[in-house]
Length: 278
Figure (tube, rainbow, N blue to C red):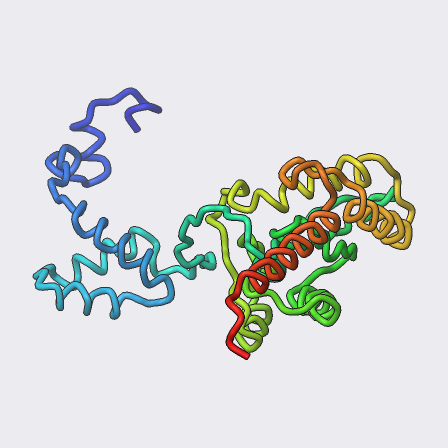
């Protein structure tokens, strides 16, 4: 009324039957403590309701009136259904150490690209951290946890079972199906910290090579072309790719070299053993 008819506050209050003290009244109520407490409870217990929150508040010895807490609870709209984001357990940072033998630690990661007509596909890469050998490059349109398990079973049937598999926090890797399968097979899933791809640097470097040589170098009409090129590239990578961290030799040559070295050491140690009396 003031803005439209340019009248005084007193007249506007009389016309609306509103006491002038109500117009000038400013609440001195401070609910910051209640708001902070409810925010903490909502973060820790996103599926609980007011009764649960208020019961915990009273058990902590806070003598806040129920009506006050309920008023703040409604003002914060905590009584409305909230979308709950699945939270990850705490991940610990571990140093990236080269294993002392094969099948100790594998690394696994996803890549993505698209066919010429726009349909997206994903590529599951698995390597052995010991000699950086590519164990699997599996492209497909859909790669849920069950599909990841299938690929792992195929690799294990040919190479043996790893002790650990290093992965990120993608939905396929944190799925209950993969975690259950890993537990049943005594395989530890080592999760890197979110947003820290350098903690999985072995496969990140491998992904860069595959991206540059295959995904960025070709246009694909179907998945068959991707699989054929990926297979040829994996064979060439394992047999002839000069890996700097392996002394400039390929993963398979490094594996053969280390096997020969270990065999030689074992023969020398057996020759040094004292001969028992005849």
